[in-house]
Structure formats: C-alpha cells, structure tokens
Length: 261
Length: 262
Image 1 (cartoon, one colour):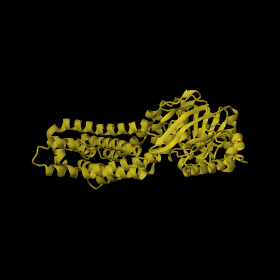
Image 2 (image 1 turned 60 degrees about the vertical axis):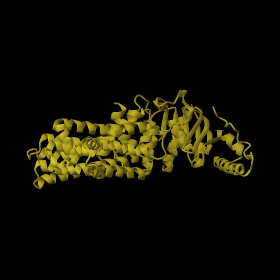
Image 3 (image 1 turned 60 degrees about the horizontal axis):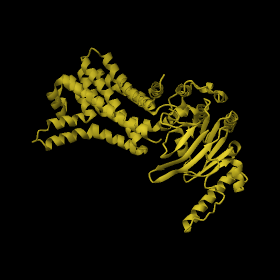
C-alpha cells in the first residue's frame, strides 16, 4: 500500500501539487487521471523519489520514503517512453537492471511473452518504437514489487502486445499487488482500474472507486465521467472568478476526497 | 558488483560503440600517424599534437559531454527509480562519460607514439601530453556534466558549453596578455601565476611544455611559471592544479545531482 499525505510541490511561482493526500490500495489498480499539466507526472516522480516534495509524507508498504531509496525495492516503474542508450544491447539493459536489484525474485513471464531472448543481442538503437516499449515493460515487470507505476504503458504497442500487457496488469492485481497507472485512453483504464484519482490544477478532486465516480457523475463510462469532471471544474473556475463568493457548482465533489488515508 | 561499476560498465559499452567517439579516436590516430608519416620527429609531433589537444579536446569534452548528459536524462530517471543511492549512480554516470572520452584520446594519440617509439620523443614528454589530455578530458567532462545538470534547457546548456570552451581555450590567454600589457608597470608575477592556474587549458599547456624544454612556446605565463618554480616543482604544481580542476566541477556537479529534482 502506498500512502501520500498532504503532498505539496511548487516550481517557482507555480503550485504544481497542493495538499494531495491519496492512498493506493493493496491489490487494486488505481488510475491517476487529469488534464495535461495537472500534476500527474510530478506526483509519480515524488513517489519514485525523483522529485522531492516541499511538504508532506510518503509511505510505501508502511516504509517512509527517504533519500537512501531502499523503499524503491517495493516499486517497479515503466516510464511513458523508453530512452535506453542506443548502443547497448537489449541483453545489456536487462542485465543492468537485474544486477542493480540483486536478490530480488525475477518474474520472466512478460519477457517470455515478448520473446526477449530473440532480441537480446540487438542494439536498442535499432529497435522499433514498439519493441523498445516492450523492453520498457519487461524492465518494469521484471521483479515482483508490491507497487507498479505505469505511465501510459500501452503507448506505441500493437494491439496484441497491448493485450498481453493488460493481462499482465490484471495478473499482478490478482497476486495482491498494487498498480498506479496513468493513461489518456479512458476505455483502457475502464477495463483495468478499480479506483480513480482525478487531479486538476495540482489538487486531488476525486479519489475513490470507479463505480462511485460513475454514480456521482451519472456518466455511462469512465471517459464520460472524467470529461464531465473536467468540464465542471472549468465551469467552477469561471464561476469562482466571476462572483464575489465562489459558487458551489460541484456540490458532489467532497472537500476531502474519498479514499484518502 | 556495486552500482558504480555496473553503471560505469554500461557507459563504457555504450560510448565505446558510439560513432562520434570512434571518429574522435580515429581522428587523433590519423593525425598523429600522419604527422609521423610526413617526417615529423617525436618532439615535433608532440608539439603539434599539443596544440590540437589544447583546442579540440576541451571542445569535444564539453559539447559531446553536455549533449550526452541531456540525451541520457530519461535513462538516468529510470535508473534513479531503482533502489540505488544517488551518489553511487552519479559516480557511475560521470565515469561512464569521462573514461571513454579519456580512453579515446589515449588510444588515438598514444598508439602512434608506441609505434614510433624510436623517433625521438622522450617518455616524459609523451607521458605529459597523454596525462594532460586525460586530465583535460576528466575536467571538461565534469564541467559538461555540471552544465547539463545546472540548466534543463538543452540549447542554453550547449551554448554554455561553447561559451566555456571559448573562454578557456581562446579568449582567456588574450585577456591575460592584455592585463599584463595594461598593468606592465606593476609587479604582476604572482597574480599572473594565479591566473594561469585558474585555466585548465593553460595548466595543461605548461604541464607538457615544462617536459619539452621549449620555453619559447610557453607563452608569458608559462615562462614565468617555469622560472618561478623550476621544472620538477612546476610539473607537480601543474598536475595538482589539473587534478583540482577535475575535483571542483565534479563536486559541483555531484552536489547538483544529489539535490536536484528530475
């Protein structure tokens, strides 16, 4: 389980994250969604320790995140796009990551599904974008961490490979591990996610089960619901600017998002 | 194996296959071999190569280094997401850049001197040239790393790298000479020695020339340096200054790497 408590982050004059509190349940897939520039990437980077929060705490499996980075043993990360050094062979990349995490149980199921043995000797720079993305996925799923963070995981994958990856995500959930996933493909998230965390302008506007979001918004699909949230949020901001007192146009959005630890 | 050696090995594998590094090695090899082939004696080749080393090596280390660090940004983020300490990761990344650059120069410039060992170059002279080249590679790779970590704007970073090269390899000596001419009536020896040590390119030049007994080519500060310290002490001081020029920018870059947000 991962718990973020009142995380704040400011870049210059810009408040990127404002008191974000969120709990990612064990054994659940949580979709982190929001418009561009809403703070999703910054939040992920804070969880990974790439960026330091100005305020707030982060616990992964009860372990506080610190600079030593040992807590990252509990995390597997798949960035949006793979940028491995072009002159390394696929085998070099896989071996490097394996050796950086000695003693961890290796899960080679995805590596076999994507036939990594067949491309081990190929240079990364010669691979297609889709094949690089497969290597990227294999690196993230190579171990059995309790939390997987996936940033647009199926981007660039062909439908068959995307299905393999989605099935793997479901298998991870069945094993009782957690997944934090971002994607702009709402139909994909709808088939994968148990929970949704909706960020907008650095604030967490909703956190809770997908079903709860659908019932709140009356949306028929996650895409409808998220689009509705974004429209309402914009309308709310316009109303707040145009009146002396902010108009509560989003009464159903609780001040404290559900699912917060 | 520890994190430093794992990341270093990956860097060595990557850059040893990099076409620019291969071209850089072959260029030094071709030029040094060509100088011998066209009838140059060992000392003449050393002096010709020294000019190339002082001009080209900082440029390559700064520009290639800066671009390489920017290009590695996403891979570094992936490595930072693993349970590894930042300090060790930084050491591996820096060495993975600096050692291939230094190695490329060593191989390219060193092999012709081994092949033409009987052509009159002294061991001290060759060692000083190769040592100065390695020192400059390590120092300017550290400066390049610091620049790339200092600003996220790639264009600005490459501009800063070019500016650092212009300042150290082209403009600096002219400024020192101008200052010496303008304040010629004052006792400038000590300040000028300090100014010489403040530029790694000048330090490398003096380090090599003190081994070659060609004080006429040392420039004003170099001649003053040799007269003040003599050859042995001068070599030691110049070598120490070059080491300092590796340590300070590396320290700044490391501090930045440990503290910055990615």
